[in-house]
Length: 377
Ligand code: GLY
Image (cartoon, rainbow, N blue to C red; front, top):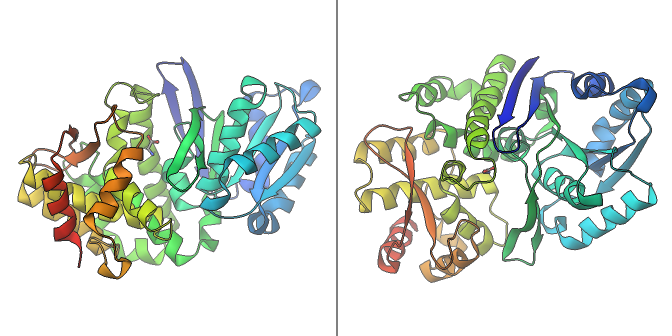
């Protein structure tokens, strides 16, 4: 098992991220040891998951927790971005009251980004905030959503993650065995976020080259060591950005949103039919195109971004079958949380070597229109 410690300068706190196999069968013991819980005062556990995952893993998790003396209540939600809303959060909060959770209770989030975001959100507001533990089961949630404490629910179709908090988990436990049951499309979509780190790591292209060299086995998912490396390198990179800028206020964490302004507008325009990782892959290629137009980066860096996305079979342009027009897509920019007042912000590659990104703003509508037009095929 690999442990990555994240130390948060702002809130002077730390937590660990455990990555390994067979974690789920040992959840009870891990929880006790990692959080330093005493047998004489074990907190109540409120496990939030969804039905499929609960069928797959719920039994062994609950057994492991009960064997260690925990009292456990399991609550399942439906799957999908559309249930990540205020109404579901309210139902969960009512259940938490019904179960008489106290300030010392712990919420466990077993699932992908939807479950993690929602469980994190309800724990951030229940009695002004109780502990929660992330147990991510998808590649996307392991390498991104479960780390860093951004938790939220959606408000209507335009308000993705609009109602939320920064509430750091007390522990993250990523069991790589859960990735075996992940559908192919979800694996590929998760890779979209993994590729992003190749453009954020200041390692002179080392992670980029490693990804290209190991492409076949990464796509086939046939080597557990490679999977562990992908997950741990991604988490390590993300942790470094989060540690330095926990609440995204000093211009560092925002860089993790490379490709996300374009990506979010594509997701919203598709009414979330386009997977997040796919939208981000296109978004990174559009950011590269924008960076070129603004003379922020070189043709070589832009080509490297597009080539890596293509290498992993992820979309690099906007399929005209979606029927999006540039103005449809630009309309969604105004709801982006990265905006500063009316100003829309984009994270783009910068410089002549991959691994550097910067924020650009005040981009003219004409340039954005061109970026979209050139990318629709
Ligand atoms: N997903 C970007 C962040 O957590 O800041």
